[in-house]
Amino acid sequence: MAAFLPATVFYLFPVSSHAVGLLLVCLILMGLAAIGGIRVLSPSLTINWLTMIGVAAAGLLAHGVIAHALVPSPITQLMQSLVFLAVMLIAIYLLASIMQEAANALPQAMGWVTLAFAVSGILGALRLQPPGASIALSFEKSVFPFTEPSQFAIAFSTFLLHACVTSRGWRTLAWLGFAGGLALMLQSLSVMVAVTLAALITLPIFRLAVFAAVGGAMLTFVDLQYYLDRLDFGAQGINGVESLSRLVYRQGLELASDAFQRSSGWGIGFNQLGSAPFSSPTADLIYRILRNDSNLRDGGFTAAKLVSELGVIGILIMLLYVFAAGFSALALRRYALGRLHLAPAQVVGRAAIVGVSIELMVRGQGYFSGSLFIAAAAVMLLYMDRSRKREAMVTTE
Image 1: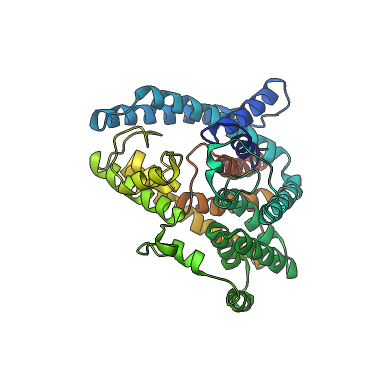
Image 2 (image 1 turned 90 degrees about the vertical axis):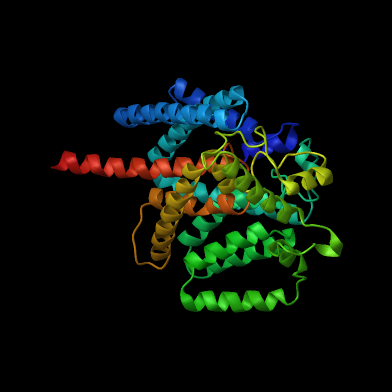
């Protein structure tokens, strides 16, 4: 539900972001909890989580007030964003509780969702897409329920990585081959990055070399100018036309640099990007091309948004994430090679931590997206699993 519903609402209805669909997901989870459909397994952990939500909201509010004094921005938007964040964090805890209670069924559930992504990708490659109402359908390509291939890649990356890590032998190569072919058919650099990441983590050195050689041979039959154009930030694009993907990424870098300098490293406040004053020649160019600023608030990629809005704190968060993602990637590689045992909940959690790197560093959708929601729930699941084991050890003693 969280993987597809936010994107579906964004695709079918004239809304400005995935936040509307994510709010619907949150309300459904909270409604299930209200009627007893979700069993909270640890009252003490619940209290700790609610306390953490309060502390986080208070901290972000204090940060935002100081940021407002440095760089004027709408306080009402900050308050609304904090309320949404609190609702989202409560729903994250509820989703993690569901995942923990059904831990043994997680691999099967992940498998079905991955197959759904595969079908979505195939239909997108064949251009068999329903009509949509979203403003983002001004883009040339869509992969229902995602309005563009990069959004599909963001959501698919965690599930692709999980499928490759939990498969063995030819099945892993089949998933990588399928996803690689999909990246070429969709002309999506983001999907290609997700495939490369999965291959680096799951394949032994020899198979990785063979996979790279076969992939390189196949690329000789493909026009690579589309992908090279998106990697070369100094080029003028195909036929002198700038690549929109490259422009969006450059916009994120400009916004982060501008906000950091304006606020002296403090940041402009939580979720205030696009509302506070900014200077970005690339953002102006994108507006002239699209006639809307739909890419402005998400910062192009989420790391840029974090640095823009939280300043030095955002940089520290990203450094902490890089450490956690690196640790999780090494653990997943050892698991994929049969050198480490991980419980299903740990595999899902670590796949989500690594998979969300596409959204953080390649192409983002803001904080209130389905992929970040699932990643946060997976991290919470890891914490729940560790707490459960700790409590079991104490009980045994």
